[in-house]
Length: 466
Image 1 (cartoon, one colour):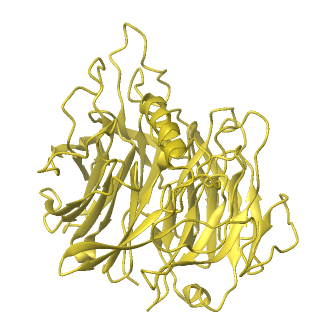
Image 2 (tube, helix red, strand yellow):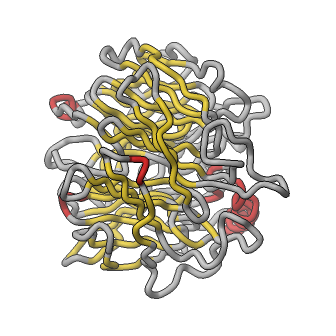
């Protein structure tokens, strides 16, 4: 989701864009007819939380948000995993769950640390949060740093999670325009961790986000001395400038694949392929644009052998109903690019095929690859569109394999649904903005081989081969 400070302008433009596109024929392949139930899968009996699923998918557990992380704006956000633990970001802080039995997750601890985003990742005994909102100070007890006397602070917060029942704040690093998302890139020495900070900007009158801002920021964290973490580079990865007509510069999200010395950056108006052999000096291999179909380049996912990248478009910034019959199938969707001779070549598009109501915010959001050798399969969140599992082994003809759909949140909830949906050690974990942590199981001949792969940890923006 784009930050509130830029959302109004982007959503306003998206309203005009969707209106202009209504009735426009969709380019590229059409995955399947738009309906709540695709022809290939009928809904199973509703379970636990009045959800609808394909026959091969079921909800096995739900952990509702609890105090103090259950307020009106205490939205669940991103996820990370380590051993038998799941870490759930929340605009009010973060939670840790014991998932040694995925069908019965157990709360371990909660940390109150308010801020927009709180994108979370874990590395050894460290947990890192992205803070994308000016605060009065770097610590968790700071208030919103918007008063005239406030210096304003935003960036990264670092915690010690060696004691899962009692995480402790360690330090913080201030970054220009804060940190909307971040990406871990382990150094050649395992005691050094590099973190790529993605943030939108600039804001000319802001104390925390001055112009210009066509860059990313790289933070070095000495694992044994995280208090000495600092910014070590601010590379400009846009040699040709950024896409015209966008409301933000910088990047929304970067996915690194350290084993392949590659990273893919989704940077609002552009997709960028990077060589990260030297993690402090990333080199641009290619910069691509799709002004016809993409509005906000939101995130990127490599396939396992790094011969493809899936870029997603967060049309409207996550606050609009773009999965209705008025929005073309190539907008608010995924674009599949093959990497041919080191260059990105677009092959096809995928959008989850069930038509949603005009009251459901729905657009492509966070997802991850399933570990299946020889196949390219993803699970992905679509806000109120739910969770979709889809196969892009044939880049030209992607198809949905299974789905989970709660339906409209109702009431005054204009923002709801699945923020992130990731596959980890046999189950899908979905961070639902309002409903909490869902654990979902898929049983299908295509996806069953993934159950044989055991991961020790998983941070979706730092891909590993399997």
